[in-house]
Image 1 (cartoon, rainbow, N blue to C red):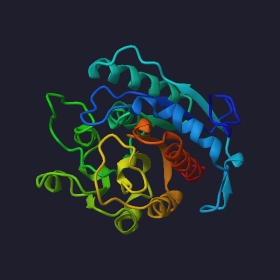
Image 2 (image 1 turned 135 degrees about the horizontal axis):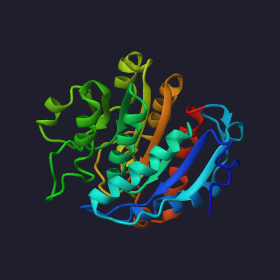
Image 3 (image 1 turned 60 degrees about the vertical axis):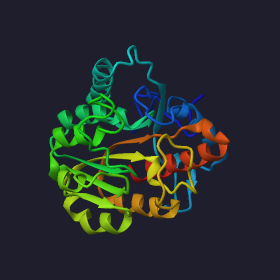
Image 4 (image 1 turned 90 degrees about the vertical axis):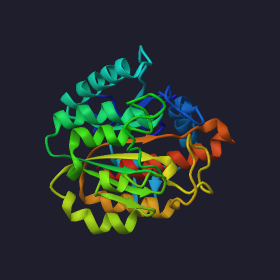
Length: 274
């Protein structure tokens, strides 16, 4: 099934939605590979109109491409496949919203965006810093993804918000890492991002576990839904060219309750992109 509000074909669409259900390197709770379809089902419970932004998804031409069926789960081969796929869509001058899957998927996606947009900045909302050099023998995994991204975009182009699980050294690795909150620190640095193309990566464990416990690596002390949406609204005047939403693990609890919340997040992100 596709999102009911996806009202355009690939040629006429402004924004493409794509699922990449990869969770091979999950080290705690797997299952995010099922998230893209569950979020689509959760959307059946929400309106296309956002009371937060006072806009409707019917105003945007959206195409749901379904899910990418990758051929190889090994990180090296997976990276090549995803990077090549994203490059093809960027050549068509499309904006993308990608549903994971674990956070590992962000690395090859950003690789493609960084080659296409020379003035790219990456914003990550996350409960974890993901700045490890390697983790459990993996150089490319959910716990190292921000480190790999930092290596390709540089320190001045990586901004991390909502972090509350990290090592002491992580604060030295990224000077644009902000603890606990999103809205206030984002407001302070927003002017630095105005002349850049923006890629936003949303790891759903940035939310407090009370709002969304169904994530692969839950961590206490996150933000609430209203702060998240308010932070999205701060981004409205920036040029957002791509977004991913990752780490929802739907079968930890009643999946449809949390799938609907994730679908609302998708709606709010789509609306800030147009």
